[in-house]
Amino acid sequence: MNIKKTHLKNERNIKRNFLFVSRWGESLDIAYATLLEGNDVKMYIEDKPSKEIGYGFVAKVKDWAKHINWADIIVFDYTGYGQVCQDLRASGKIVFGGSEYTDKLELDRNFGHEELQKHKVKIIPSKEFQNFEDAINYIEKHPDSYVIKPCGEIQELKQLLFVGSDDEGKDVIRVLKAYEKSWGNNFGNFQLQKKVKGVEISVSAFFNGNEFLRPLNITFEHKKLFPKELGVSTGEMGSSMLWVKESPIFEATLKKFEKTLAKSDFVGHIDINCIVNGNGIYPLEFTSRFGFPQVFIQRTGINEPIGNMLYKIAKGENFTINAKKGFQIGVFIVVPPFPYNDKKTFDLFSKDSVVIFKKEVKEGIHPMHLKSINGEWLITGNTGIALMVSGTGLTMKDAQKVMYSKVANIIVNNSYYRTDIGDRWFDESDKLMSWGLL
Image: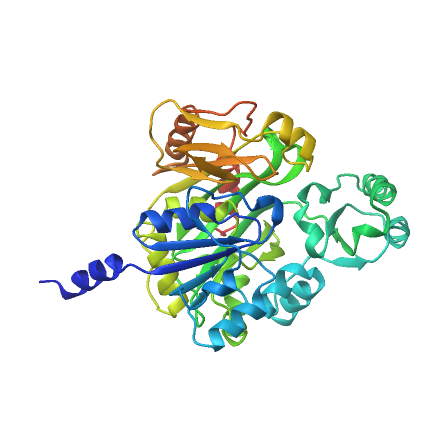
């Protein structure tokens, strides 16, 4: 008898109590998958307009703190809970989630850049501003191409990020003046970052409290609303990815933070987004939590139960993640008013719209802002994000074909999605190979 295989089988069959603490309800897919794997699951959602998300999928709770003793593991899906995670871990609880340090890495861009410099990582020059007038004066004195990056919580409004194209920054000045009229003092702090041309790519890994686990994940995001990177910036419209044992980008960035993350009491998933070109690797920002939709697509490429994997990571186990070869890809199916916040439009066009499957095939279909009534999936919340659809294949074209065939099986009234997710790979992979970065 193979004792190791028997142990793994028994480990997978253990039923555990999972408590998911969610900011916006984004981790519903992970919570639901964990339930289907045979575990008991409870979910708390902090955001009031999102409270209905997950109803009918998993058990919902109004006060997560009352269920701490019930839980074998507590999973936090967002930044801002870092101190809570540390306190719970100090009390002996098994927790998958951030730390005060990693919260600050993501939410405070200036701090993130200072830490990159401290860890001897090359960064793109940037400057933080508290008001629009100072930023406009700075551009006029230092004409160049810039990117506007909001800081703090407002950075979640991805449509406010603006990538300039004018070499003298005139387009950025026009946008800043528009923001000043529409937002005034409510905009908060923001960065002006010099624009660097190249390939945008992210590298991420799961961290067990002591070290990074292999394989690493390489992701290509598609942030614009329309194909060919046209339209407004959204949180994201879809991603393509692959798993790798090693990465020069990882070695130049995240790897340098391994000891610091261990000291900070971090246990979870961390991603660093970069612009790379023939001259080097330039980190843009940290995501020190699950990436959305990154984690759903990652789940498509992982050959073990996601709940069991999260538990092992949170316990501090050192193991190799059983990931598929080839590529994974995912696309959001959205409805009005996405990517904007307009309750009237949402209520008129999208609230309680039914997700219909021509054939009852739900593998690779990830529920997002949905509730389940008598087995039917209905859109709820207020953002208009209905589903994430994923596919996998040995080649990118195979993965695209699988994913879009699943999309064709779904009917959602007034829905829209990108038709070119994954296309970036065919051009950008050649560049990355020539630069020795892939």
